[in-house]
Amino acid sequence: MIAAAAIALAAVLLLYSLRGIDWAHAATIVRHASPALLGLAAAISTATLFLRAVRWRILLGAEGRISLGTAFRATAAGYFANNFLPARAGELVRTFLVSSSSGLDGGFVLTTALAERVADAIALALLSAGILFAMPAPPGWFAGAARPVAVAGLLGAGAIAIVPACEPVFLRLAARAPVPSAWRARLEATVGAVARGLRSFHDAKRLSGFVLLTALIWCLDAGGAVIGAAALGLSLSLSAAFLLIAGLSLGSALPATPGYIGIYQFVAVTVLMPFGFSRSDAIAFILVAQVLMYLVVGAWGGGALLTMRTAARSTAR
Image 1 (cartoon, rainbow, N blue to C red):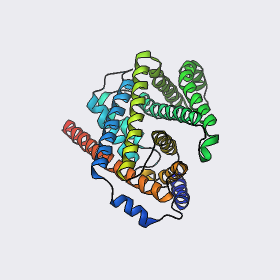
Image 2: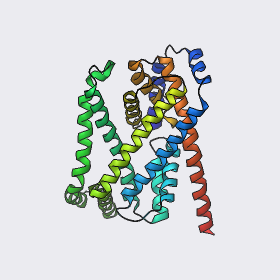
Image 3: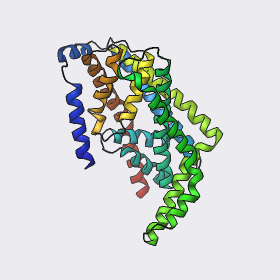
């Protein structure tokens, strides 16, 4: 059902995004791309992948020590899986890799992985709202987007802050659930794991480190987008880059085909055209960005999966 919805959504969004594309113009843009600038953009993408692993490790540290190598390999493998598997299955992949190698509770690990994604969405929503409020005349559909985006971000932050405090209430509800006792025990364990995962944000030192790394990650990602556009001879402002990244991040939460085909094209067209990009420019840019994403994540994530598989075989022997 989810796969069918993802395929249907991708088809509709692609039909809209690719309408009226001048493929000759798009091909010319790609053909004259600067290899040096594309290489720099790929290096920045690698750096942000590493920083994401460092950031996730901060949350995992609430319940145990995880080596940086393990956190990086699991993070890379998870992003690699998200590019090829539906329903964000990469979060399950990186959860399994960390919990199986460290002994940490899988529910706690998965909660930190998902909460990290939610925190990213919150940060990008608030940042986008700030950019839109600061713009004297937001172009196109952005004009009415600032307030609802800010409200959504604040609600998400409030949920992370409040939900752990409600753990006793959720535990009582789980204890009274009309299900078999074995399921009830599992439900209570899940409630506890989720509360502990969200509570990892409640330590001041961990939270400050997480927030600083989040700011650095998204600044690097925005800078990488600006450099990637420059490699294609296109001019992308930093504010437009932040809005694009926010749109791509939030769009990736929708039911998606592998590689977010359709969703990324739609976001690129709807975000970049109000900032002076033609539809062909936007499509050329996002296609090159997706190829770079596949190359970077494929190299590190594929290598991580191979390394961890070899290590698992050696342990089994």
